[in-house]
Length: 83
Ligand SMILES: [Zn+2]
Ligand SMILES: [Zn+2]
Image 1 (cartoon, helix red, strand yellow):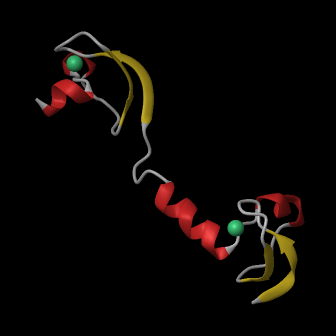
Image 2 (cartoon, rainbow, N blue to C red; image 1 turned 90 degrees about the vertical axis):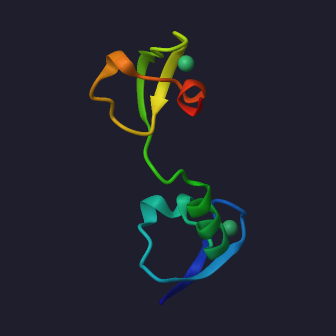
Image 3 (cartoon, rainbow, N blue to C red; image 1 turned 120 degrees about the horizontal axis):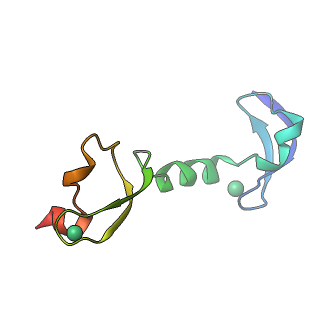
């Protein structure tokens, strides 16, 4: 462990120990253990692919998909996909 006197960028709490040596240039983005855990659970599990597609069923716009579409002619929006 590395000991020091840093500040959490999430909750503003003091950080006195870190499992790694922090990069001084990124000291502002350090997070305490609690915020680090929180950040991980907030993050979506899969990266979304952004784009500009339209739904083959209702014609609605689709701007993000959980996968990279291969065939864009038969895409369905989330609502139609559930049906
Ligand atoms: Zn924190
Ligand atoms: Zn649709």
